[in-house]
Image 1 (spheres, helix red, strand yellow):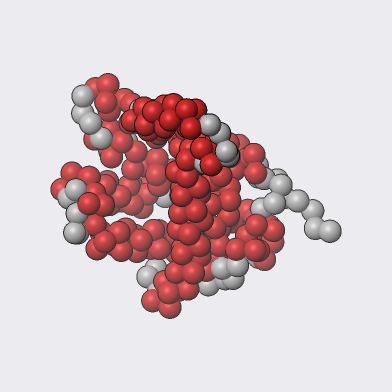
Image 2: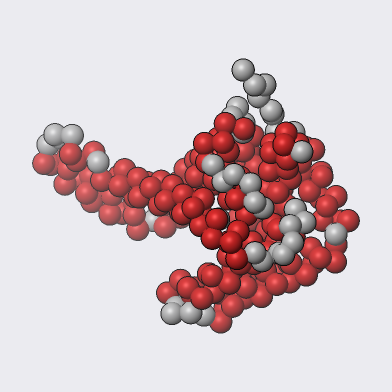
Length: 242
């Protein structure tokens, strides 16, 4: 039985910071381009409601393909065949996320089906309506659940996506096998960055500048987060395969 590799959280975060520092010019450029993407999405167009969102999403996807192939020094940085290879793990990430979100939305609707009395069901319906109207409560619960499920619906599928992008096996089964035993470490990473992004959002609201703090200060943080993902992949996959 293969030994379980344990994520060295402190080491991964430190190595990622060192990579950002040693490649400051390139990482700054990536952060600026990312800032432009966010500005276009949330300030120039109306997010996913806008007809231009799908072209934006396609361009944003290519941006991350370029980023990870750049990190792993895989030229050309935009390889057509590799982009098609990534669609399978990408679809799995979307499917898993969709299933989790759907289950999350459906959970509050289940209790009335357990044969409770009509009076209780009516009171529960009123409570549920008020609960759903409290967006902060809903958002908070959603964040907690997505954080706890992140190792399954994001981190491991992301490892498979990176693998396919750089020309290796995009097997989701392999990604789960190589990273087993690291659930709480992955959850910690998810919680850490979620808190950082939430802090930027709250800071922007407190300063009265809306989402601009998240866009400007959050973009370098997003790049750093993805460097951490790349370092994580490097640790679990490339150190084994060479």
